[in-house]
Image: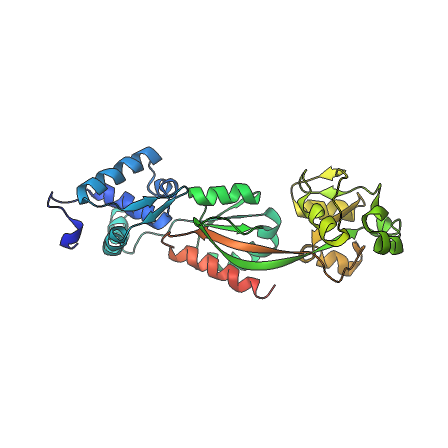
Length: 307
């Protein structure tokens, strides 16, 4: 491996090298531990022993995850092919071991309507995926900790630990079923704004009504103070409740295009400057990106261009 990687103390431990390569590829101790089936404390101990053996630091510990040093980059480049072949031989195969599943996370409705249809063709090419739905803040914390490889985020992540690329813009629309639309004075709504909706039940996907609050602030230039009548943590369920006549809500237009065309949902207002939210595709900074993770990332970015 080159004399720069040794301090003259003899051969390196194969188990420690395997653990090192897993952490290098995953970008965090937690994710690396998952790949090799060890506990995080064991992984930490093995890496410390390997660093002492080499006499060089391999990773810079970040608040979330790790960043490889130049020594780690060199070691990983020399280890990757022989270690993969050894894994294949140990498993009885003749090809390098299959890549671990790609761990993708994002909002449930975005995964269902956008991500999974776009990614389905990759399965035929051997890409395995484990997909998790949840709230953005929780998912970004999991990404920093190494639980996920990629996260579709409704906000731009902060800090240097994560990289984010713009994915898709969501336009928000104020909608109701025809029965409720007939009860809202459209002229008054255009002239007086939110006051025309006083007493109308609001349907939201979270108690703090973030989408509704944003629409009220952006379009009506006022603070939303009314509490929602129904809270259900899935925008598809919000859509269903509004279609069924439960009340009024604000939805991404992509999620209700069919209903708007069919007339089962009616836009109560079509402002010249509708609120828009940009979604991002986030991954850990400094992590070695496995080929299948790169395939999923590239496929999502390509699909977003045609949304």
